[in-house]
Length: 481
Length: 100
Image (cartoon, rainbow over all chains, first blue to last red):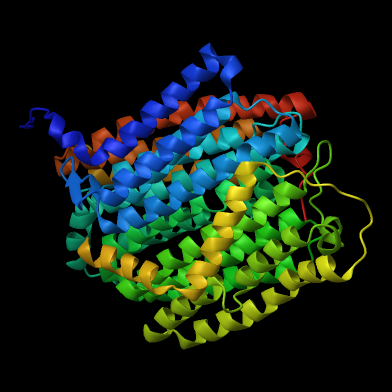
């Protein structure tokens, strides 16, 4: 007999930020439809809505809703803050980008918000069903966003590649989930952990198959080698703005479900997934950093660099400790600022009619635009991991966590590949500072762009000089959940 | 009474046909159909398990998967049409402008 409970409105309290964002998303469609002349309202509405949701999430007490299906705990709060930050910063540079490429951007903001709701649901998923729904709600608007700029022939190609690989990865993930459901009899992640702990893993091939399928699906989503092949093409073909968002928001949300499944859902199987993930992390760093060496396009180089950074961030999960999870979160927070800063400079370089994405386009930038070049320098130093930037601190905590957890060889490999990455990041710096410019570019900088560059610089340097408060906040949030 | 293992074997076979189709076919629409086949393998698995475990969660999950698959089909076909307009083909061998 199935029991039904009466609906009480107070039960909706934990999902109020998400409901607010859904409302804003619908309102954005309405505004675009009925007051097309006031289009400048749309970005402001998006930013204000996201900022309100961010304050609501940061101020909320840890709770759970809908019988443990939706967890508003500290773990979710940190990931939600990163995703909201990514969306707010991308919205601020959107106007400049769409003016440069001269595209219509009406549905852009509502798609952005719906995708954000998906990311928030992923961060809060306490049940495999919610996890899957959040994942698809995040991914479907992104497929549309990637293919949005239809006049550029590359975007439909990128969209179709992203769509096919994304849907394939979802199917793999789902089959893993269905096996897990059959083995444990529940889709609740907490109860899966209890049931899986009582099983004899070695004698249970179905459990290993479920683990393998889940890992493959999750690795596709966060672009970990050998499941990374879609990433460079999609990141290069998508509009630069969407690439900037994709490399941070969905990636952070992907790590949120990755952590939720392997760290909270299958902690008993750590002896199995720990070494697998360690090998995959090393492979990812190798593929990302070595392939980035031979790129001529700055955008494609940043795509490979984002693969490599997924490898670094995976180190915290490899460790499988609370300390490691906190290090991954802190790294993703630093990555938000440094990667978005680098992409913001790339968008700033673009001029109407020209995309200016190749390495040659940053030649002699320092001579004409010293401030922009200096900002790019800081972001690239941080991506390399040179102190005193945030990138160094983030990498340091990750390596420390992996070392303490007993993966010294992985740590040595990570340091070596990090040294290799210095070559291609610093090549951009060399071109900016030590080459003569071929053409005379004049850059126009909107107020939103200035704000984003300022915030990213403050974030990278602030986390580099004073990492204590942020790291303390993350550790406290994790411990309290 | 058909035993659970038969259902699960059928689900695995469907899923594997889907994987093979996705990896070997070269038409975007047929690749997408293969993904739907994989999803239906999952659905069959979930419904069979739900019946034998006597829990409704699997059936609820299946409804969500069917709904999401419909939304996914709408977006996927939209993207395929956009691709056809720019390339006059939906063959993956012609989608090779992005590489390196």
